[in-house]
Length: 405
Ligand SMILES: CC(C)(COP(=O)(O)OP(=O)(O)OC[C@H]1O[C@@H](n2cnc3c(N)ncnc32)[C@H](O)[C@@H]1OP(=O)(O)O)[C@@H](O)C(=O)NCCC(=O)NCCS
Image (cartoon, rainbow, N blue to C red; front, side):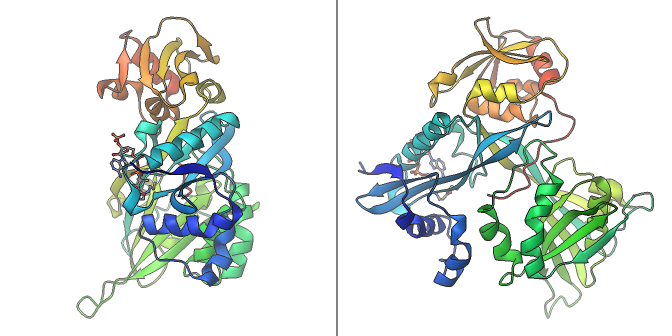
């Protein structure tokens, strides 16, 4: 039995809770100098700590932002960006208590959706988070891969100085916009730790920007990893893409053309790309772009089920009634009718029954109701309902987050 209190973190506890998170993730401790550069990314707001006396033993952090939902709308998101428990205090309910406090806080503040990236897939289902958007890792062979001549890839690509990158990229991300369901806004506090730390004056990442007829419309942040050795002198470097966003297909193709043109590189690797990103189609030989891994990317938690279901659009089909169960936020438990006209609570009999984490999996369109039913995650009371739910929830474009947090 462990005694601890869960309460909001104060300003004085920012550094100690950040260090605690780092240790739980086996990260190197940050120096005072580094903390002075990116500590502003770790404000006290929206952090719940578990404390034994005055000592932090657990942290659950989040920031508020917007997330794009199917149909083009956006809603407020509680983005859970740091969860850790001290190694000598795990498996005693510390995370469970912090997750409960965080979810109650999201609900009290009227936040309809919460999301996170999971270090391990077994942790968050019990708290109502479902794997809602996948990402793929691409490997592209250099120098063999070339863009097909039919691909429109006009405009110019220019490399930025680190100072220019810190200045220009946040505004450019904003300009590109949240054009896929699952993409999130990057608030000012996101940048110092996640971008400026790596692409700014003290970092080692390189930033290149594409300009089209209307100005800057895409960027890529990458790093090079040297693979040449005494035994393998021709290996070349691997160009590792960390962040790539483009407003349209021309800008995206032009950024890829640039990446494939960099000399002394034997391959380009890009993790967490949209599963339907058609890079292979852009090449003269599609085998030069291989998908080598598909992983869970964004985990989604409907916090206010009615508001979340109302926020997205649905395709044409007869409505279905979903019976949703939510153990941690019982106010969500109930029946919801979902149809092309929207969603509302109802007393009607349910066609399908599911837990709230499975609703998270269905919500952005990554998984079909049929597949979820076949996997035993949806109980089917009306055999025709999975087909109807597939029609309603399906999206043409795969969901994608594209922001690490
Ligand atoms: C993951 C972590 C936060 C869990 O904290 P915790 O305080 O041990 O979690 P709890 O005691 O509240 O566990 C609740 C339940 O989840 C299970 N669980 C927790 N972490 C788990 C894990 N990593 N793998 C499998 N099950 C896990 C527990 O066994 C427990 O199950 P039960 O309710 O059936 O008994 C902690 O192990 C940790 O800090 N890990 C390293 C950092 C990390 O991975 N952070 C997450 C970043 S996304």
